[in-house]
Length: 70
Length: 199
Image (cartoon, rainbow over the protein chains, first blue to last red):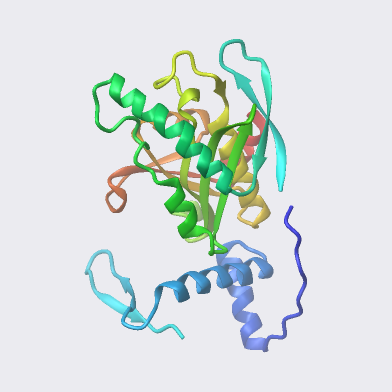
């Protein structure tokens, strides 16, 4: 078991609602949602560098929409 | 960190203690280079084939190095008798595809390999059994620890498809054009629990 550290997170009601909504949708705890979000952000941040873009492609129409990340 | 696990000696079924390490280290990669690769090359030469086993081209040093900085990537190694018996890399930002768990996160096994001397197809007789099962169990435990309830997914090399479907009880979702047409398999919470009970 890896050592874990604790932090307090203050969220607005709207942010907390979204965390709760994602927790239900993803079948995770609220902590699990935040950890998943952190991993995703780290992955995306490492890939999206100047001159690179992140797209979501529709499987059927092949239509691409750009995701704007930080 | 490491944990004790038990493998089976292929010739007589005797239990053999092994150590599961929660990181592939430089020492493991050195062992891979000095022991696995020569044996895979020897097997390829014996079969007069340029390629050897299906995973012979996997560059573990490159794969481990690429994933090392990411929280989403985990690596594991199994050691026994001072030898590297298997390695696995997993990713924790992948979503499930089965309709009943679609979109929910799972532990995705990116690479799993057992040492060439433990494979019946490359070494007769093979030395140890149970490395694949030990790693699938490790992936299930990781999934539970992450709050993913045992959900696991992977693309299988053709030689390992029966193992994942029959031995592990995973659901076969068919070939995936986005992954060299490798067959995709997935484990649900219920299937994971069944695997843990029966192993």
